[in-house]
Length: 386
Figure 1 (cartoon, rainbow, N blue to C red):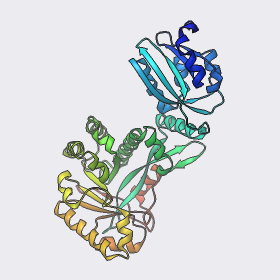
Figure 2: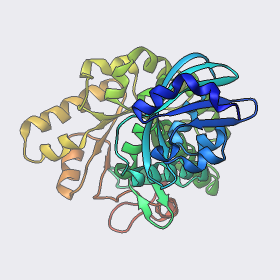
Figure 3: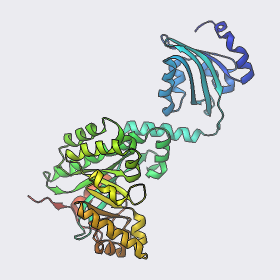
Figure 4: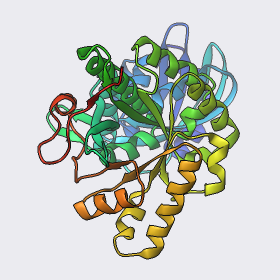
């Protein structure tokens, strides 16, 4: 630790703002806090601790942000800090570094000290991603003409120890707000590829079966996304078309040029593209030709509305006709009743997906459905044509 007197210039500000003077030495992992450390719940850290101990007091998503202090020049960063009393403090670090040392202030930055539960869940999610507890569950996609299992959509689930299976709506907002959404997507796609590979291997690759999984706008825009996805599909030795990539129409239109490059790259290598939730975002029927989608999924709103609304039925018919002209298949989402199933078949949809067939199945249940179907719901997957 350095001489506390070196922090003298900050002492007036410390007294006035209820802040701490901070000095960090990166070479020796040193940390000195000047002021009333107890006010921010850092008494133990002040008595004995270093830079890495400070990092460990941060929320998982904030820990990488602490590296900004290693840069040369001024910095101003907001962080969530866990105090000795296990309460969360929102703090702000303002100061200057030269690459070897950093000096500045830690000030209260508002927020609530009563958000321990949120930080606990964030920490648990970060650990779950490392442990493989964020996984894929599979909702069946059924051929409407034959009622055979055609494939699955892989959906994110969190198998949280001591809690149970959490649906996407219970943790995806947290993943989105704290920067884990790409990690979740990567985990789900990786598991979907491996599970499909195992199901195919059990039948010597002879199943007429696909699995789809989603990618966000941020992922699709990443320069290396296509290479990483294609490498995973190739390593799993999946037949062409076995894995399909789903993209949301609103996401695609956020950066259509980047999306077009990525989607064309993966499609050219045998990964079909599925346009999810068609009709809810920015796209129009005229844009279907730009991206050369292979499958269009009609949003469940239209399926439910079509049972009583002639306009909705007309929209579905129009989409089906245009999709057919482009060589695309159509999946009707939100099929919940036999009446909806009959209507979608009558309107020309190729596949149905919804609670009429099943909710998202655990991997072991999906594997059983591949070979045995689901009684009174759908038949098992077909063998591929030789």
